[in-house]
Length: 295
Ligand SMILES: O=C[C@H](O)[C@H](O)[C@H](O)COP(=O)(O)O
Image 1 (cartoon, rainbow, N blue to C red):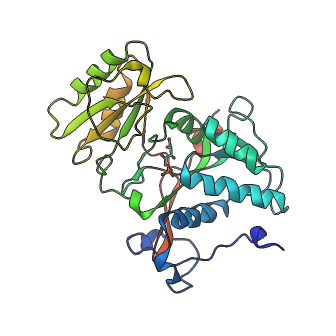
Image 2: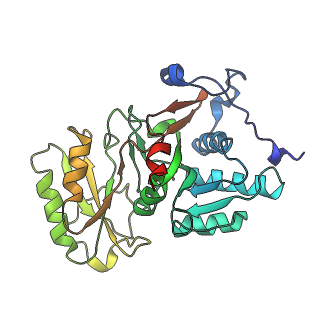
Image 3: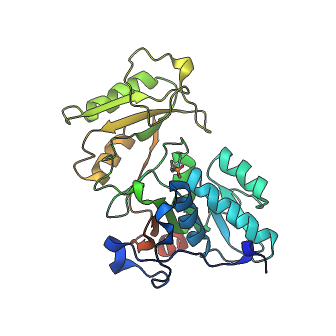
């Protein structure tokens, strides 16, 4: 069997603060991975997640540099015959193109309203496995596909772990419709008025979600446009989001003009974290089986 067909990976040392929850392989190899780059860590997390993929599954295909490793891996396993009869539901135009290049057959949520397993990266993961996603702009389709999944496995390197959502100081994205975007932005500003260190801006195509400059003279023609032809308003919290996340989510979604936000609350079934000295899995409460049976 070719190397690409092996279903196991080469790194399995418990991740200390997740040790209690780790149901992955027992500790094995020494930390020969000390010099692993961040991208190698993403690959390790992705390959571990792909071990959950079984032939015949409908798979939610994530977006981003970590998910890319999962897509490539699934493609390799299909090519060598270790997997078969997979149907992929891409979470973005980017994921569709990458998956097609990897040889993964594609479909959509209309044809497959229940997804067996989704695998995707995240921008932030808090201790309760709530996520921030969408710094690549794909939050809406991701939330639709991953919310329709029996199981949603998140793959991250250790840099994505935060004590509370927003605490990285980077963007918490909100997708808004272009019509009246400046009014929607003002309403979002009012919602968080008084929160120390809060700021927000329309995402532009020239910069990415990580660029934190608050130029009020952004021209609309520079706006970043999502796959759904919407805009993104990025929220920034100096010390993360304090307060009841579900309440804050409801308040954001109640603003007319907001389509969706990038906080994924209670959606992750498991998070696989790869860091230089090990990889581990933490399981959350979000096993979707029961809810989806009602569809
Ligand atoms: O819109 C982008 C997605 O939410 C990504 O899953 C997220 O940004 C993580 O991407 P990466 O794996 O490249 O850090």
